[in-house]
Picture 1 (cartoon, rainbow, N blue to C red):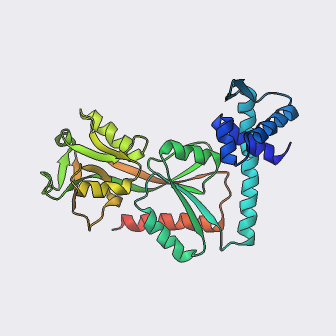
Picture 2 (cartoon, rainbow, N blue to C red):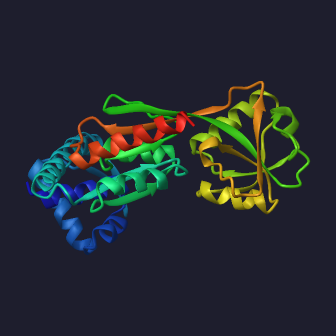
Picture 3 (tube, helix red, strand yellow):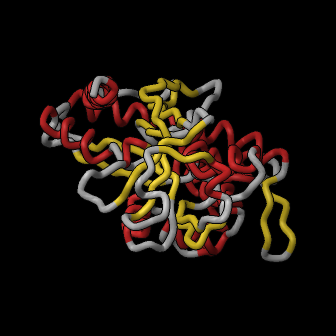
Length: 293
């Protein structure tokens, strides 16, 4: 059994599509098909059920996938550990976030300590983040809501109030607070379902008798401020996303404890480099300082 066979099998197993897997691996479909066939011959069992051009993992394949992912995970951890030992001042931090409003400040503080460390940041939905966490493909996630699991460590770093953002000139702009029921006829801008803040506010609004009407649903929370300023709609926005330079009024929500928890999350089995440990310290220090303001 060869390492390449495992890598190819995992790609096909995740996509359950030979053509797409070949494209993602940058190999020909015939080469990929032959490699999978040799692996099945080595194992003595078929790993996929085949119906025409369609593939589906069978029970043999599902069981072997878990083992193969674990084997490659351990090899990757070994590679990262050796890289850290040989060149501790360099490397790349793999980060995933569902909430990006605080990330620029955190990265700026960390870069002061580790100027030569590179970052690769992905903005993901909660479901996408869970998948990468279980695969051990990210060093840390900054997530709201927190994510729990047997192989996951979860550290709550911030309790963040959610406010109502309205543009200058809005009927509520001279207020400091508002009840949820007063918002039932408003138009909203927000992120798509699957993001923690969106799912939380939708649920609480539904509990008081209405569902927010969205004129915009996107993947970039940072864009919401400009849409609010333009008068496209109002928005539920975390306190940490406020910007004093914007022509926006932020209102407290009355009679409901509308807050989100921000958590720093990592895989228990993933090797944590010295630079990653320092990043974790910077995150904790940043939110501790924020809570004192």
